[in-house]
Each structure stands twice: as structure tokens, then as C-alpha cells.
Image 1 (tube, rainbow, N blue to C red):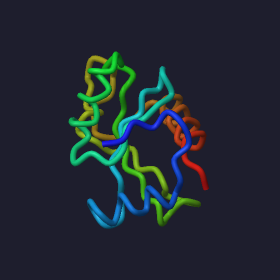
Image 2 (spheres, helix red, strand yellow; image 1 turned 45 degrees about the vertical axis):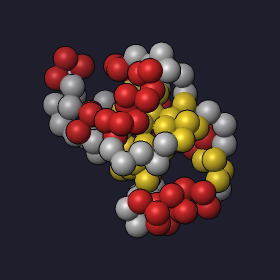
Image 3 (cartoon, rainbow, N blue to C red; image 1 turned 60 degrees about the horizontal axis):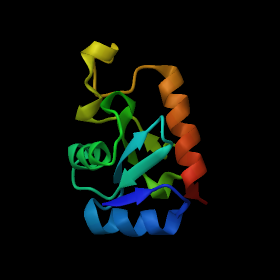
Image 4 (cartoon, rainbow, N blue to C red; image 1 turned 135 degrees about the vertical axis):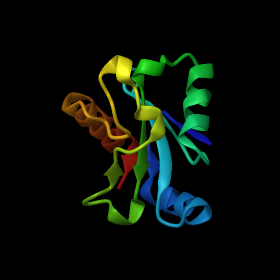
Length: 113
């Protein structure tokens, strides 16, 4: 797993994808700290990593990154850790549009094209 708090290259994400799943990299984004963890086997592992670094669970959202689809469909808002009825998120999808937009902003800031 890799903590991303500064730019990471798209090439590095492509290498991670090939090594792990072929076309995707799992990531968990902390929307408050504006950081993310990538390259874990499971979103839950990445979430736990960030929790040990002081992140709050309500700020952590699981996504998948598809480096070969950078211009469109790059981010998939799908993870079991997103099932959060207490936060009115009743599916694996990040249902709140404001949170999705914040995730996109953070990913775009951290991933170097």
C-alpha cells in the first residue's frame, strides 16, 4: 500500500494495476485530509491503514481507479466500505454528489497526467 499525499504519476498507477488486478487500482480517499491510499488488495485494508494514521471513518471513501481510462471513466465509486446507512449511503456507490465531486477534486490533484 502507498500513501499518496503528493503527486503520483499515471504511469505508476498503471504499473500497480498490472501487478494487482490488471486494469484497476483500489484506493481509499480521505476527503478531509485530501489524501489517499492506493495499491492495497482490499479497500478495507486501505481504510484500516488510514484509520491508524488518524483519519476518521466518516471521511473515508473507497474507489477504483482505471489508469487506462484516464480521460473518461477513470474513477469508479464502488466499494463495500461505502455501505454506511448512518451517513445515508445505502449502497456500495458514493451516493452524495458533493462527496463524489470532492473525491474527483482530490484524485485530480494527486494524480499527475
